[in-house]
Each structure stands twice: as structure tokens, then as C-alpha cells.
Image 1 (cartoon, rainbow, N blue to C red):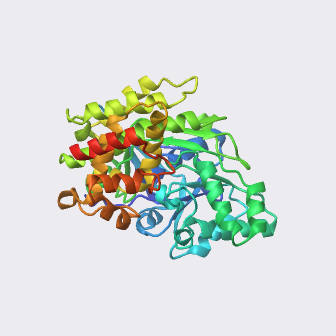
Image 2: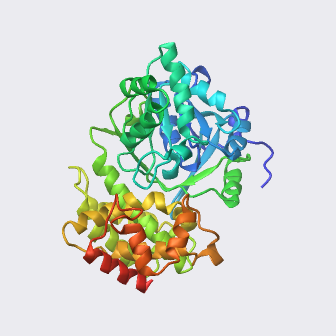
Image 3: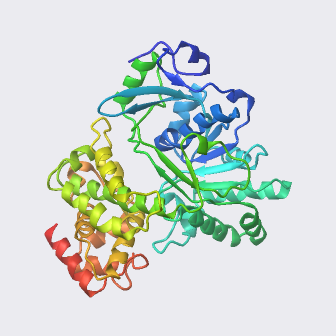
Length: 465
């Protein structure tokens, strides 16, 4: 649809009355949050909470978004003054609102000085991150990969921006990871301090003393936006919106209450501030994310393109249910307010939402960065109790087949930061693959080293795939 206008601050008054939007004076406030990785998920999650919080406390905590390499989001949002729509859809209903929390988008690869200046601005209080697991530049054992970190990653930008703050006597910042990593705040802190310490020990000490790195758990299913989604948004808005996102009704954000300075009133618009994020984080990683990865590799192998198709497959759903209920759930020490059985029920309902075309090939990307916290930690837990995890082993076998190239003819090339190492290993015989990844000296031995019984079970699963 070619709408007569493109969404912008100047066209807000032209929106139909049924389109929701918060009423807050964002022009009166300089951006106070810098977000790295401004993809669809951030726009439907952290930016959504931030937009709502501005109505509560009357202070527009606007966001400077940072794309690390691609200019696509900047090209979508900057001509629209940072505005975009979010369509929330279920099988029963659809609603559309326009968000105003993003003020501008920078592209780090072409304007690093502007990113550094945003970090160093006296108006900035919080840095948030959704850079995906591979954006943290970790080796297989979880330490910093210095070569990757020095080449187009977040770390040189953070180092430079925080150094300016330290030199100017400005306060430290809250660095809030919103990525699917266990203990994500502590991981970001350790990786950043390690990276900086090798180059500037004094700055590393300042970061450790002055900045805070809360852990967080984020949850909302946000598929990649399609051309059809943008057409539907334009019909609803009466205006073209190149930055439109689509999501589900459910949203959750659990944040460790550990900030270096002021923050938005996120806790008054649905976010939970807690002393310990670990139980929520572990449930999400092992149950939701673990099931998502299993659906991806098992589903692609059976010709499915979307999550809702895979979870409806009678050959896949029992495996995914067993992974969540019989394997992941018993490995989690729940918080007092967590009902993990009900959580599993809710996840299955969310996965089945036919209004969300959540692509399995999108979930299948970067498996080497995801499976340690999604599957391997659960395997290690049960191995200590001499218990088997047949569902996770079946998913591992499907991942191996994906790495081997079995899905390439239909779904395209394997996307993984270490695909050049994994694909040749996956093409070896079952025993060689199992030893190379999960043997005593295996690539993932730091997360799960298979004992004799587990290795035998893994070999059987690989043979069946």
C-alpha cells in the first residue's frame, strides 16, 4: 500500500482515533538511554516499556538506538523521527499503537564518534543491549574472544565512551544486558572489564567501581517484520511505516534492582524489579528458549517454516513437551511466585499462536552460541543424577543434521559464527562428532562433558536422526 504520508512527528495528528499512543513530551528531554542492537525485539519490548513509563513519571526517557553494522533500521526510523507502530496480535484480536520512545538511530560502523559521544553524554544514564549471544564475542568456554571483540563489536565503543566519562568526572552508567545469556549482567561485566584491563587497567578499575551490570530476563515473541506486516500497518495507520513491528500480547521483563543512577519507572508499567533474576532467567532459557531451538531444528527437518506449524506436528510436540516438563523443569529451582507447570502450559499456547509467523530458520541461527544455556546445562544437571534427557538428545541430533547441511537445499546455508568449524565436524561419523563437541576435550566440554552413559545415549540419538 502506498499511503499518502510517511509516519513522523508531523503526521501524528493524522492517525485514526483507534490507534493508541502515549502522550508525553519527548522533545523536552535529551536521550537518556543508549540501546545497542535496535532490532524488532527491542522495539517491541524495552522501548515499549520505556514509552509507557514516560506517561507514569512525566519524564520522557528517550532512546538513542545503535545498529552495529546495518543501516536498515536507521533508514526505517530516522525519516520517521524515530516513530514506529507495534501491532499486537493473537488468534482473537489485533491492536495497533505508535511508540515515541526512540529519538534517533546511529550506525556504529559509519559514525562511531557519535556513538561514543552518546555514551559519554551527561544526559545518558543507562546502556541497554540486545546484540544476540554472538555479539558478546565469547569463546566456546565463555571467555572474551579478543580478535572478534576488537573488530566491530560493542567493546571498543564502550571503552571509548566510558573513558570520556571517567576523564570528565561523570558518573558511571547502568549497563543492562537483555540478551539470552545465563547471568547476563555478570557475563557482560566480566567480558568488558577483561577486554578493557588488557589495554587500560585504570579504566577497568573505574568501570568495576562506578558502573553497574544488572541481570535481566526478557520475554516476548517478536518475529521478523515482513512486507505483508508493513502493508497491514499502513492500512491501519493510513500512513506508511517502514519501522513497523508485530508481536504477541504476552510480555515479561524481570530486572535485578541494581542501578548506578536513575531509571525509568519500568516497574510501574509491568516490569519486575527483583533481588535475584536467576530463577526467571533459568526458566526462560531452559524452557522457552530450549523448546524454541528444539522446534527449530526438528521442525525444519520435517519441512515446517514456522513455530506454530512445528508445535502442531504430532511427531514434534511430545518431544518439546518432554523437554520442557521432564527435563528442563526439574533442573530449575523456582522462585516462590513461579508455577513452572503453568509456565509450560502458557508456552505451548504461545507457540501455537497462528497470528505470529515466527520463522524457524531465524531461531536456528547461531546455534553454537545458544545451546550451552538452552540444552547443555540441563544435560549436565541430569547427568549428575544419572538421568537421561532423550528429548534434548533428539534436538541435539537434529542440530547436528542442520550443521551437516541437511536443511540447506530447502532453507539455505547454515548461519553460525563458527560454522566453518562445526560443519566439517558434523559431516564426520557419529562418534567423531560426539567426541569433538562433548568429549573430555570437546568444544563444549566446559558446559557438558558426556560421561560413558550419556555418550552412549547421544550416539543412539545421532544414529536415529
